[in-house]
Image (cartoon, rainbow, N blue to C red):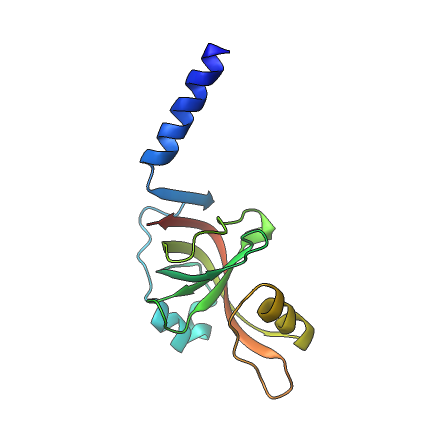
Length: 148
């Protein structure tokens, strides 16, 4: 019992001392960040190869952390980040944290039903088309690092 208590204390101390939350695959050490504003301005230019982006988490799925809205700075337009193969999530209280994400840029059209779900049930911010669908510049991350 005493060993378990010591182990739990060490785990808690390590968590408190660590300012970075890492999820998914490790981010490449030699990867250079592409400005998120550049990705948003020309998403097709960045859709062929993996890129590293950095920003501030403006919003996060409150159900389980299965997506986050990443912006260049608070209050600016951003990109919705999901996680490769639905393989990991981010903490639901990560709004306001800085994030680095490595992955692929995609441009897709969400059905009205998908867009309604994301906006009304998950709190996502989307730019709607006249028919209720939403064209979304999205990002599928293979790995993320969050910091305060």
